[in-house]
Length: 448
Image 1 (cartoon, one colour):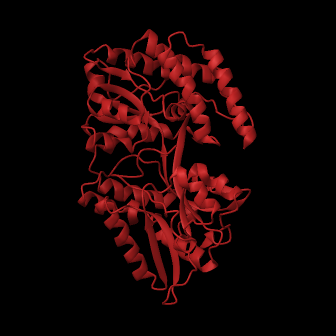
Image 2 (cartoon, one colour):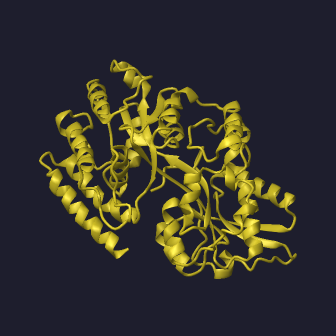
Image 3 (cartoon, one colour):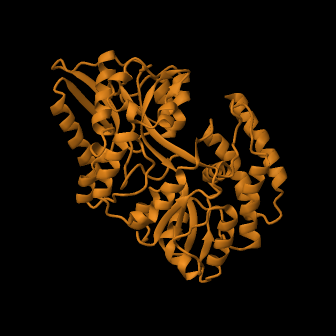
């Protein structure tokens, strides 16, 4: 799954409508003026006025710098709609340069709709500066099919004010699941409807968080070859047992269950929740939409100390794209997203001037000198309490970063049932739940 936002405010994503003709998405590569034309997606909609203006301004500056390229951007919401993505892909209706989640890459390649850009990436100035593990996501069987644009990793968002009220040290968040359980019990003990720890358990979100918690324990959802489930393990049992015990033994998770992300965000924003798992991009949502306060909200690395779930997005190229379009698309990606301290995602000074949060601990896209430059510009324009995120940044260095499993949404649907069961049934049989889930996941993997 993706996290709740790509960057500082609502970054609405886009798709090209299936109602459009094929030529309206992919292009013939030439405009009337003889320029190389590329179609791209992920332009924020007009309703997201600030981001829309940033996007348009950046395209305009790109075209001014590259007078031989014409960029045609498509907008809608969301950028990748699961209900239309596969049909659009199968119909050859993708833009020349099109948005994908990390979990899409192999599927897109398997359908034969992506261009192999291996021989072109040397022309992408930023390519060697990008994190290797993110580049690897877009490499299949030794061939490069796309470029990463953003990433996120899961951590533990917590309320420093409630920690202090419960007699806990807000500068020392829990590092193990045992400590999470102990701290949650103390926070719930404050009463007045205060919940110590909350988790999702519906709409596939419970399965998503089960996966993140399993990674944190050192486990995995599927085997390395992607053919067998690996949830019926001591690590999988520990995840469900911990949730069961916090819910029923400690009463630290509240009585209302089958929660989804908005429910939990409302709790945290209202000051009634001590902790929940999320990515850093939740923080501005908690402040701008749910009533939270930047000073009270901090994020720590995933408890458990072994791994964390990562996700993110990037761009791939239509198999029909000409060499000229691929080269033009790579130049556009460099300009828009991959120049440290500049562009749609990196112009921190512009973001600050428009009252967008700067300084959130997004996982670093770059390495070396490029990373140093990006961090320098971000720090100079920070307008949020960056000290609240330092433990997250420090702790992530020791964690294994793990992408979501194959067939993620189908698997999450199965795991939702296990998570919801332990949170709604005191006598839930954890061993049987894991055995049943394992069989169903094996079936999903067998079908490909």
